[in-house]
Image (cartoon, rainbow, N blue to C red; front, side, top):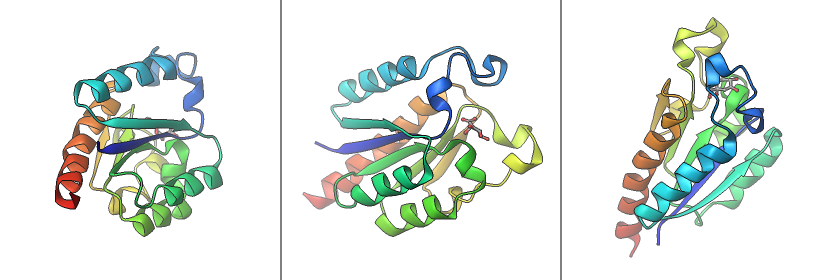
Length: 151
Ligand code: DQA
């Protein structure tokens, strides 16, 4: 069965109370429930992690080498700062989808640049909690393709 890793970056544990006008009122657990349901419907295995620590995210991506078939990541503020996360994604060569709840291009200029997006298969930004579901949908296609090719 194809395996997809979902990574929620910093402050996403605060969803529900965090600036709801920007990020909506759905909690992280609410998003995770929807992701688990979609994964079950498509018969893929998902692992979900949240971390506020850049190094932990880097470690997790590295540990996924040859274990995950695709990654969906919301790197949060690390999107705009982290060359280490970018290098980890590039190193493992796992197809990765970057997702954002808000439309980062409609916000402050410092959010317009992503260090991660250039090493990703694609980016989904601006659809609230649905960004994750769209991201998982894309990841399932990519992971299933890899999985079929490998077997
Ligand atoms: C975010 C956008 C980032 O700019 C911000 O730092 C976040 C959340 C989003 O999902 O819209 O933490 O990644």
